[in-house]
Image 1: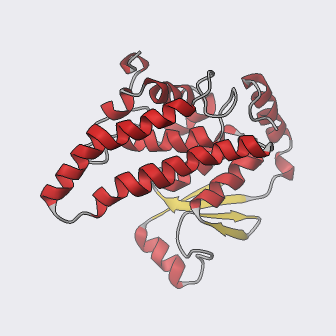
Image 2: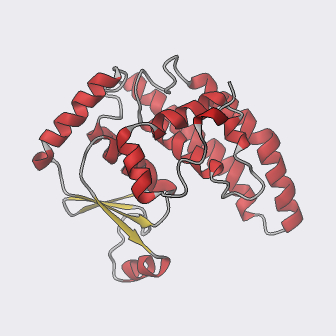
Length: 244
């Protein structure tokens, strides 16, 4: 596995992927024109130098695809097509893309460490902390929940995440893995201040996570991707904003 190796070995793997591009399957990711749960898979393929079709659809187009029977599996987006075969569910898609990009470990324990971070982010932070505040219909209750989210819940969870970072500043080993990308997308969601009442300082107050976001922003393939796909949104902070 390339994961857990140094950056030069990751670069070697990326160049090997480009050299063997004709052996790679034809890939198409279909999702809305936002980052969301499709972004870790898009980033993994981008970092790995693996070509894919980045199809962006509207809500109406997604419903039309569903009505036409073109959304298989879970019947929703994101959806990944692999030489015409359909894979649904964002975590399955992200893991597949990370594996072929060399950003998911072969070693069972290292792979479990990556999964540990992904579950903490998707289940404990997104599912249990953030999502209840999005479902709350009462405006005053929502405001109070968002204050608790920003002041208490997210700082507590981010402290747990920071303890999982390796001395190199990544979650597993010395180079980027899917765990880092999933966390990067979460931090960008918060940092762009899309969630009312949750300021970007929640991320900046966690220097290990802010540094991780900066490290991923600095990967040349990611920098080009953000310039093309997320212009005006990412990056959402300059390195001097990171609290030491």
